[in-house]
Image 1: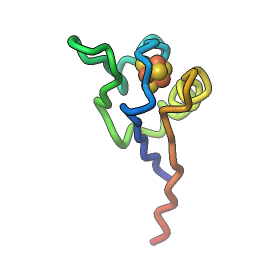
Image 2: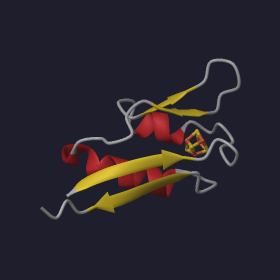
Image 3: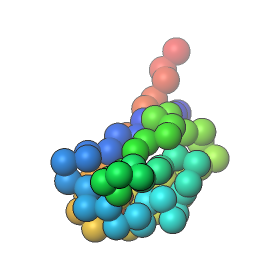
Length: 71
Ligand code: SF4
């Protein structure tokens, strides 16, 4: 199982909750304050914090998709 994270900069309002939760994965643009994704496929060990960031985003701009690698 792995995880794929996506962010929607059209929805982001720059609250910074995601960055405060998990700096390894999320960052904010110095110019407009909007979210940037540092890591699109974070390791399993960060899953709980990614899911927390999804919940804390006030506008639902973050999605974390579980991927099953069936091989
Ligand atoms: S928590 Fe949501 S609104 Fe706030 S910076 Fe992150 S993506 Fe943007």
